[in-house]
Amino acid sequence: MVSIKDVAARAGVAISTVSKVLNGYPNVSEKTRSRVQKAIDELHYVPNAIASALSSKNTARIALIINSLEHSQAIDEIDMHYLSGAIEEAKKRDIELRTYFYSMIEDMSAEDIARDFDAQRIGAFIVYGYNKNDAVLQILHSMHRFKSVLVDTPIYDKDTSSIWIDQAQAQYDVAEAAFSSVKGKRLLYLAGKRNGFVTGERLKGIKKFAKDRKLELTVCYGDFSEAKARAAVLKNGKESDMIACASDLMAVGAVYALADMKIKKPVCGFDGIGLLSYTPQRMMTVIQDFAGISAKAVDAAAALLDGEEGRNIVTGYTIGVREYSDVL
Image: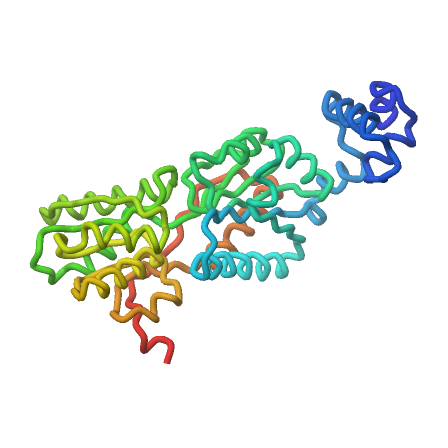
């Protein structure tokens, strides 16, 4: 096992200097600090206190990485449900959590994040909002240095668990419920982000629905943005008979675009956020238990830390209506 003495010898400094670098003392020159850090990286050194903490399932912490790239009240609502569910489950299990918003780490390398995790005694991390373009998170995950749980991502292996709902079926079900009595044949679908795992699955669901119902399908990417959804409906909504949205936030934008054009057409959303209840028309949506999903994610992370292998966890959802009477 590599010791602090080995690091000091490789860096050509005293053991006390290595200790100062590890503990963040300010009175070390940047040149010396870089030399010590290089030796640590080359030797893959983990301080004894950290190593012993990581070996104990009772003291290893779990990091929550919130990867919302849009900032709005609606998305904040989902993130708060994720946080509350994780905190409640961690409290029951006597597990410590550390929360990282993506903006805090987006300029760091995967190795920098890993070293920070080591210093924080983190043994596993949970990512909310992982997508195909997150190069740094992909590298961090591929290191297999930590156990991981990916929410809304269909990736799992021996060190990784996946947890999400059946996105394709949920999108199909809400469209079926919302448009069962609609006579028109032109369906406008507002998809999420092109690089998102959920976007691809939800798109499969709406395409199958359109095929089964023999509908003419138009797909626009709204990036889960209310403003972009509004613009798409202003451009394409008049020629459509119904509008399905891959998020409630986009459904809000769609409804207000229709109101601006002084027309009314059926719209459905996805997620079940409270904001949907304040729109001027009742809407069908997929209702997800974000707090419950997050609690299951913490449970899955704890199982990985206990030595269990990763698995694919598919949780439930309901199809429901959101309308103004819900908030009265």
